[in-house]
View (cartoon, rainbow, N blue to C red):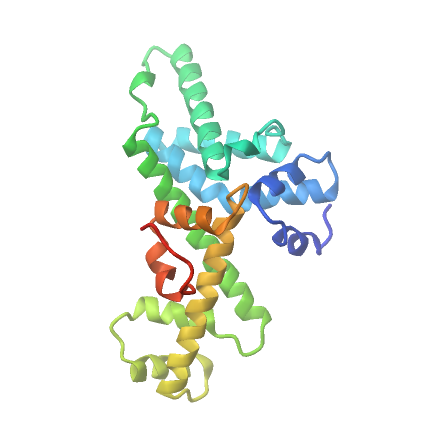
Length: 248
């Protein structure tokens, strides 16, 4: 069983390809922890994408479970990081397993699946996968922000950004009042604005870091391209340094 320090070490891993390699490094505690980390991070994206393809909850659950079993069993050791983006590798693996499932079910019963009409690598399929991946990335960023708030004294970034997300039309005074109620202490409007700015910077840092971990060679240009592809660039555009040019 992995010791309690494993997750923190895994968080320091530079890319998801590195995490995948760690997951296939025998049966050590670190390898098991890496496999569990992969499952926890990408289960929602996997399940939603399979569900969008099959449009059958029961069978989508079966296929998603098969993908998870393979991740936990270390069956993706031959994955090629030259693919560049971890999400591209994972999408191909999920689609192949979904097609295999459909072909198997087709052989098992008279009610045929029209496997040919399953969404392929067309624009609609890619958009579907990108939506699931984007949701997964944002969910991981929110969780990381929440973890920072729990472990860093005086950090209220998660609470404040959640309030801003829920009450988008609030003035600074109204938002400060809500934050004061949450914290049980008075927060002035000007202090709230400063905290909100810092919270957005924290969120942007975590978002860029999460996107970078999905790339084999996370240069600034490739990170930028991925942010644009996932339609996340607008969330960080005004928070990036002036020399971070975008092609969006």
